[in-house]
Every structure is written in structure tokens, then in C-alpha cells.
Image (cartoon, rainbow, N blue to C red):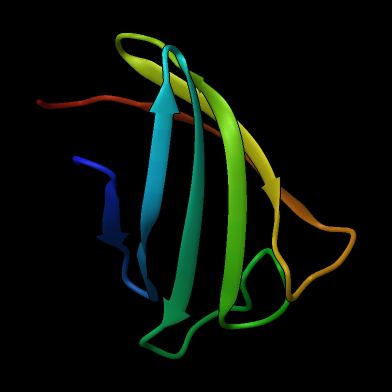
Length: 83
């Protein structure tokens, strides 16, 4: 919210920033592992991802690479579940 990104799951936490221009956005996210578990989709535990995408009222779609995993990118569709 307000330009900041934060979140996590049972293996990693996510922090970063985003900029929105109309329905387009860019985000820089740092993913840091906090618990042992299966390998990430990038093959390394800690990555920095630069995403770009489009935001709609209830969804957002984005794609972007991870600096530490050349040739691999993350593509996601996010669905709002609460305000």
C-alpha cells in the first residue's frame, strides 16, 4: 500500500516498492527465505525481482526477471480477496 509491498508465506518474506501510473505498475521486490523448504522456482533462496504489469479493479497481472536467476522470470496473476 502507498508504494510499499510486504508479504510472506511459510518459507519466504517479501518487501519492496511499487509505482503505479494509471492501470500500469512497476515493482521491485526482495524475496528472502526465512525457513528451510523446497527450492524456489528460481533455484536460489534470495532473489530481487523487477516486475511490470497491469492492474484492474480486482486483479493484477505482471511479469519480470530475477537478477540472481538470469533467463528465468516470474509471471503472476494476483486476485484481490479483501480490501
